[in-house]
Length: 257
Ligand SMILES: Nc1ncnc2c1ncn2[C@@H]1O[C@H](COP(=O)(O)OP(=O)(O)OP(=O)(O)O)[C@@H](O)[C@H]1O
Ligand SMILES: [Mg+2]
Image (cartoon, rainbow, N blue to C red; front, side, top):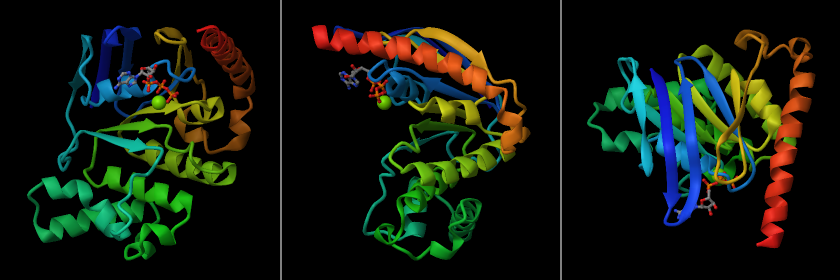
């Protein structure tokens, strides 16, 4: 299933936040969106997921969702949003509560999501018994339990320490590369964007407009091989300079407001 975003404009009252954003994400493709704080990234993701209606514009879904998909679009946020009194499996099963399913189907989906995120041995644990990285895996499992076609990720790793982030990045790569999902990955971190994405969309400071789209020339399956990533150094420098320009102007504007 492909996602086609065509936002002419989005404002909150008088505040223009997004302008002329056209992004198409095809099935099996990951598009990272990067840009300065407050430029409208989370707003864009909310629009992509249908929880916000753009002031002017549309989002289309094209193609078929997987046969057992309960919800084509699903979100992964940075703050896990787990219910502390529920076990891992109960948290993962949360999105299924809105659906009429047999007990065996429900259990099979939860077991599958736990297995895909390496959590099978922690089904009965409570969130407080898990590390930050494990908790985020519960967040990922909860997204997978509906068998989504499109994963919408809002800085999913940014609350984690660098080492955990690196490990989870490997998990994300593995997950995204072996499933035919479309993914939109919002991040502040250009190294994450380069590692995970097929394309990186750089937004300008607010109102967010597309400043540049970079295509990552490394085939998805080679991205787990560190040696294949060498050509990314140059792209990383380019991306960094684009982001630095936008962020420094945005900072100066804040100071002079
Ligand atoms: N519900 C809302 N009502 C009014 N203004 C909002 C609302 N949500 C966001 N904004 C404003 O819109 C702008 C864009 O916000 P958004 O959260 O989309 O940016 P962002 O790029 O995700 O920022 P960050 O990098 O800090 O996560 C900001 O100036 C924010 O204050
Ligand atoms: Mg945000």
